[in-house]
Image (cartoon, rainbow, N blue to C red; front, side, top):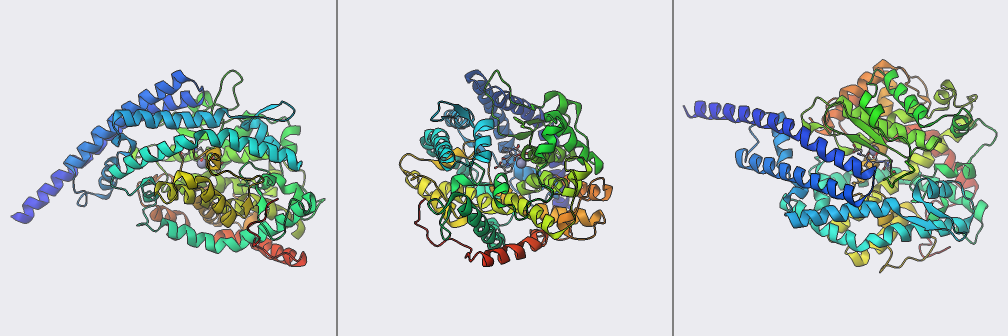
Length: 598
Ligand SMILES: C[C@H](N[C@H](C(=O)O)[C@@H]1CCCN1C(=O)[C@@H](N)CC(=O)O)C(=O)N1CCC[C@H]1C(=O)O
Ligand SMILES: [Zn+2]
């Protein structure tokens, strides 16, 4: 009898859980739509009025989250007997996040995050000649194209002071409130909450450290080769062949990807280029053409085209009449049809790649749009970052660019291949320590290991140890706040997801290449128009976060683990070449003169 009672009680609980989660998804869709739209309106029209409207919507969605979260905790204290789907949904609904905060704290939290994002998005630098430069497109273009050591240094210093310094105190207040919310959910701090999304029983940091240990030798070889080339360009006053590289010379404001200085490092001149920018500009490409080109690649794999709402509501270029958050982003409005990208597009190869990155998010949103709301996310956040980049690996091949008319002709020889692999490494290998260090810094701040007095010192130490990069000018730990000058810190977007993405995207690419029947070196694979490759990806995308990511990984690659083997196979010809070159140049990879300054 007792067994029967337990059985029927379990059946009742399961059916209650099905009803509860169904109601949640119905109600949440509307609440999330309203708060997403208010955030969109603020980011595409920065003003006090729109900030207040966004914060008002956020207060409403927090009340909704709190109401359902407390109901879930009251009605389903033990979810272990529920079916997997309801268990995972209810466990997720129980986490309130900032909805744990009382109204005063929540308003302060929202004002702090809205304000920090506005500071970042409106900061400018006044150059010695009086030019007032914004980040996007002005300083981005300057950092990419200037080869004047002092002009680069002035722009670098100006940006970090204009964007980072003003939010140093606000950031400390934000950390306190963020941790207060995470502790209320039972986490030690916000860092532990963020790491929990990877469902690795506290092993995420150990896992990414192990992945980095496998890839660090390749990074160090690339670093040594690039340092030698910068030495030849800027001379021994500014480059020390046994020391970290000054941070402002890598073609990017954060030295996170080095593709913009490819011209300084090109191994074999006279080969067909790897940069589609000249062809895009000479063929009169505009933002719309770039977006259509990207959509066509996705559709060629049998994946979804963009919706009418996408084309109607996307912000393609920077408006001239108002302040906006230019940093590119993709948006899900949770109503199965309204998906948008917000981007201040510039016609060049870098933005063509970014468009594929953002379209990857949109494709994922569309593929899991019929999942319940709690499952409308990546299998883990790194998977969401990897979708667009995986396709971009195929698009970037000289063979593909030639096929779509963006590269005149393709040489099939080892030297052209090395040129291509080096240009890819300047974006993919260069990024790895940067992708690791942002949240290494942030996790140490949330845990309390790094108090405000050490914010700058910890950042500089990670930049030096992991990236082998040194600031071009002295930093003052009592006023400088360089982390605040990188979008994801004021915007409060976690970052380890990009490190994870830069590893798993090569696993996805390899798997899709195999599905497409590709033969030959991995880096030559273009799975354009392969429905088999598309089907492989789609099977993973439509799951959303309904299953643990290990299950989704197995779906697409046949193994459940993150692995650097695909990335190492992709770059293997370059790895050997870099080692040989560094030997010939008499350069020792690594940086031991840790106290050297330019
Ligand atoms: C250019 C890109 N913008 C982000 C992204 O697309 O990830 C934006 C801003 C932060 C989150 N975001 C989103 O769009 C999310 N809504 C997507 C989602 O989670 O659904 C970006 O920041 N990148 C790309 C390479 C490395 C990194 C960088 O540039 O440092
Ligand atoms: Zn992304």
